[in-house]
Image 1 (tube, rainbow, N blue to C red):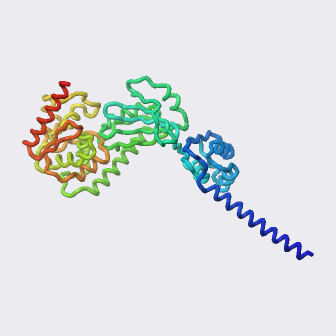
Image 2 (image 1 turned 135 degrees about the horizontal axis):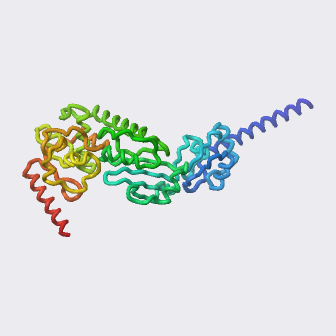
Image 3 (image 1 turned 90 degrees about the vertical axis):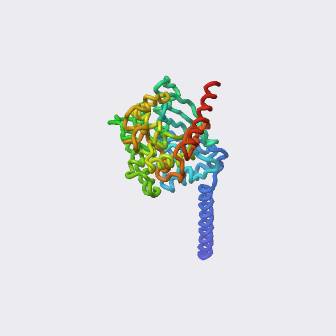
Length: 384
């Protein structure tokens, strides 16, 4: 009798363990397999939220198949206490395990509202955008020039929201003075700027920042980024370039940056100036003359006068025999790479071709023909 009872009990125990194991395996599969979310959503986790309330929210959104499994999974992974407040993009079909990793990870919001302060060459612009989860693209809510426009309420309403992400974007070819003035105007940054950084030493890029980021710290980040780009390009530079120092290469890169906005032309433009330096021909480039007039403090806003082309400044490459003493802007990575690995050409001249690009020439006669074509285009445009 006793043996029969023990045998039944053991059988029952084995059955229970087997069923429990099957349940655990099923729950684990439910936790890690693709979930039921049909379309991407932006999940907002409020400050002070707990896993149970988030699980309920996720269930209501149709993002998870089982609240209990989600809660147990979060507790089992020991991440429930790491829940972060913010707005998080959840793509379609995301698993419960992936959701848990997102909302308990870095805490950086991945959707919602973004404020982008764009520092340009002619003007600055503040753009407030909202991420559309379905297209994973930002939709502009409002944009304005902080120097000329009244600050819209759409901006002031979101500026102090802790979930809003901030970004500072530098245009390629902006001067250090323009960047410094732009950073001063960004009201979500903090701290003073001691002085204008050395021209050319700030990397044009898009920098994600937090509200209250210290301006000097951001400038240091920009400077370190440019230094890394320049040093890598210098290590990989072509042989026999007419630059004695890395600083001279940066000067050339800044000239290339200001001479063309067409990416595929940078190598050709660089080749023209390299060929001129090698042959002892003056660079004769207008952007350097303009820098000698403005010193990088804004744009000239008009064409150069003949008297200005004859004015002696350290940057007037119609008068000096080599590179100017400093960069004339902050060049982007592509212009730096073009200056240090220019295309191999015989070009010595270039002029605008009317399409936004340039016509290149090997001889003065070819160049004069291109100039005549450009002047004809200008005349036709002025008559229309």
